[in-house]
Length: 143
Image (cartoon, rainbow, N blue to C red; front, side):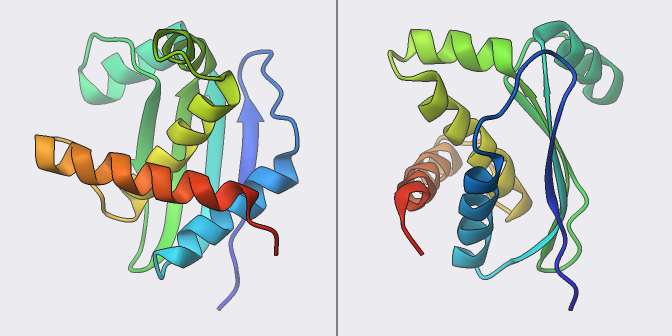
């Protein structure tokens, strides 16, 4: 089976430092769920850009940090994950954490949705948070 690609794009002036480190981490997280890497695109944008997507595709008139469009087939994860870097920055300030830590949480949150994890009920949200923490811990694992 041919391996897909994880790509990072920006619709604003955000630049992800150490792309390869993030790519390898996301691959490890996917493998830890017994899934495979398909074509996954992360698109960084601002609040207005993501708000328009939220209105147009989901009919939600709210600001959010992430919207994922899941095109997963079986165990091959693929799709587009839009992330508002403005929201991530605000959330980092509100939760008193570093921007990079909050960014990792949001990046992996989208991947966990592709893995089948939901976050509608309190129970699902608790599991999602545990999974986020578990995957964030993989970031510093040396291969």
